[in-house]
Image (cartoon, rainbow, N blue to C red; front, side):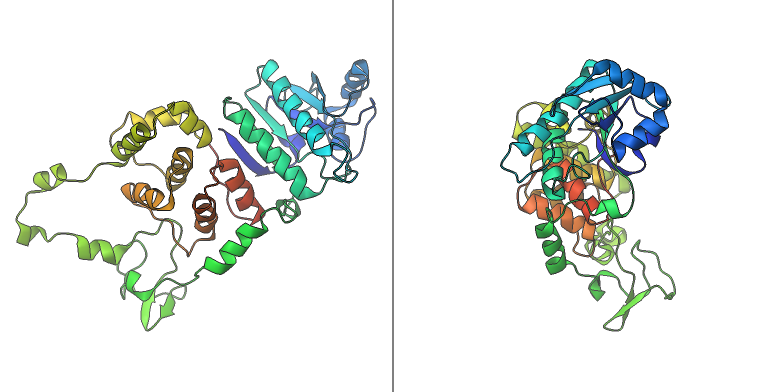
Length: 355
């Protein structure tokens, strides 16, 4: 399920197709429509006039002319009235029409604005909810790269309250400081000894550094590690006795789940190529985000997620707001990487689905 939220001007996107929130009549409207016509040049309007009127919920394609794309997909959104005039259904139809048209044109990538949330007056939470579901449904069966493009930092406050429950969860669970026992005096979060620096924190008299989202519990690992001299084992013997690798654990979980592997990697927002690379390499070392994505694709509970992360040397902590967003969705059994990414973007945190 390739998906990414980017902060950019949509006219600068280098994709196969750019979606334009078009006026129903063959005239230049405001906002995104105006910006796309300005960047593409006057030939775009001439081509648009050849199409004629476009009904709300429908889409039509023209060449992209001066844009760094092959096509402009002119899609007409409904204007918001009060929510009782079929606006949500028509907006979903507009997204579906653009996505299917991109598929007909054999596009490998498409860039969307958040449709209807500007001059058409849609409440942002409702506009985002429709976009999120449309992308999720489409990408469960498609490998097309879909971008949701927001223009500036203000636009990252996308939701209009859609993720208020996520923010509340972060506020209630975020712990800025780590317990002193996690970082013994003189050691940093990577387990390296050093003198205390200005950026180190002090907690109950012990020196330690605030953990990032790839914290390993150093002291616990040291305490748990065997003493090679006392145990007397050869290194080769110890390597033979190691627990299952990350890939072996993943294959076991896939077997327990049953069903098609494609359902997992689509839901995980992972390409088929990356998925095949992982499962065919017993000693593959994934990035933390990749493990999180696979946990979502497998629909693991929190304990299973932490165990799978542990196989790769990671853990979800309460000292990372990004981790807390992931924990919220997994603990509430909301297994959508697109929803997770939108919640991260709404909190101005780095998103996950990229490749």
